[in-house]
Image (cartoon, helix red, strand yellow):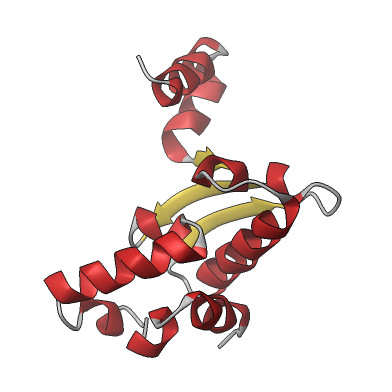
Length: 129
């Protein structure tokens, strides 16, 4: 059983309400993306805020201003789970996805220039519509 599965089991063992919450909302922290450090966590949180603002993910973000790496996104839904990855990974996934499904990202509201590089991705997500 993976750490991920153990987390779900632990939620289920905490009682009926906890199990219901576990099934309706996935909780993720910046440190779970495989990138560590407060500066990287701030970048990831900027991206998550932008994804929420643009409706590409739904949920609630509980931010810890002093320790951004332990902030928590309570994710209800995502257009694609890879959108939550660190910027370097997200743009790689976006480019691959666009090659496989040409035009699908643009149809979802993600223009090709948004995933041209990490800076473009962060800037696009930091700019609300």
